[in-house]
Length: 335
Image 1: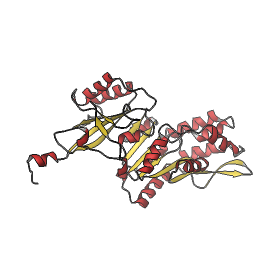
Image 2: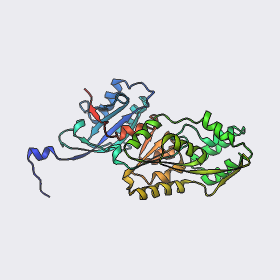
Image 3: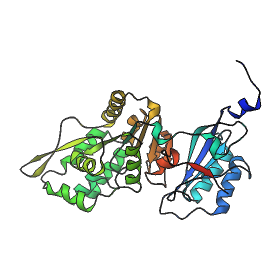
Image 4: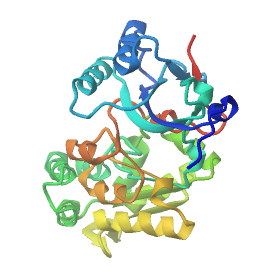
């Protein structure tokens, strides 16, 4: 390999490195400046550059600190960073970046991935896109929410076979009027914070959006129409004479079915795993998350946080935009 040491060529050299991205929920106050400076000092010394996302909604919510390398996960530095971020209710994410100038880490010299570099955004529905577990709220109409919710929690922690647990829960709904589903949708279903912003940005960037759920088509179909989602997959509740029969039609959409759906969508779109973002909260999301280069555990169970590439414990769904700003949004050096 030839090395040209002229100053002009050196200025164009790409230097591998990492960036620590910190981001918070929209409802949180801005982190204290002293705490931010403590985090910067832990990362790369007091003179390290601190950058913020140059957008009115993000200037005091998203920060980036370029570093030559990230600390080992079990190092004292990593533990101290985690403690500081928890204190400030900040989520942290390590991203690979390249500097276009080996001697500079300023915002203009960093080459980082954009949302526009991806082609598929796949996410779970219950407790990810929306705030509730639909089946628990349906069961509440039968006065059975505690029993059903306990099974749901165990299934999401990976302690029960998902398909068997779903059949057990759906069986308890036998005889419930179908109108109860509409009541849940109208009065209890809410989007998680940042959902609309993320989906609007994803669609503007040309991503295929996929809602893949172990929940029910009654809800995914309505959300698809409401949010412009490109594709959905979920289970279908059997209804007879206006009442639930306590059965699911066809095969259960379990962890493997979710993963197959993501993989098939990627193949159809001609995408590699590095071009896929997946988001979920439960154990039945892990298989589909393994199909992507970027997996995000959203306010998730410990087992999911441990295996995902990134974890959002504080931020909303739009935290994806802090990690991968779409075209038109970029980080700038703070003065």
